[in-house]
Image (tube, rainbow, N blue to C red; front, top):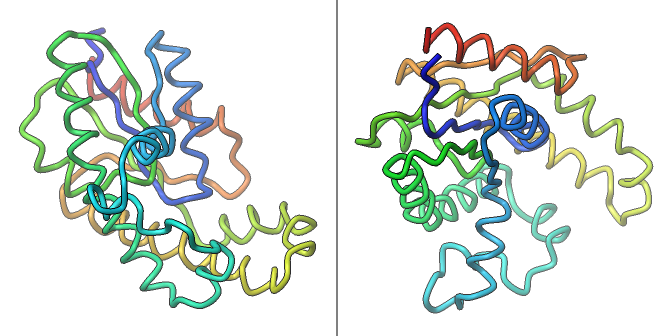
Length: 206
């Protein structure tokens, strides 16, 4: 089977991309990269002046930031950050394709539109989508943590609302670009989701 050189796993925060990507990479004997790690590395060697997109939360209290701002603003700020990160992601994709060094890249700093418009062969993206109840369940599993935080209930609601909105945006965009999606069931394990991703990958690359 001729698998693509680069496989990208996108989806909203809390949907389980990291665990799925790690399992898929292990199965295929690919390396694995998280966009969270990439953005943290870039922030460490840049400044707000040189890379304002990536330093948007510099010196901000994240809890107050989430509670103060609307969900639409939280998502808009995230997309502003994604714009700043995209050149680095694009360069990594190109390098691994050119050198045929297989890699799985995961993160919610990936957008269907960016991947659909990427003029680069030998890549494949899978988009994890779900229903709002999935995010409610994920936050409920961390209820003790949020109870220990001032205004934790409001913070948890914002996390759910942000993930749900990002999820809906990804679903709509992936559908409009005819990109493969995996519908994540409410009680699915990371292995279950990985198996669904593998089925799509195998069907597309028989």
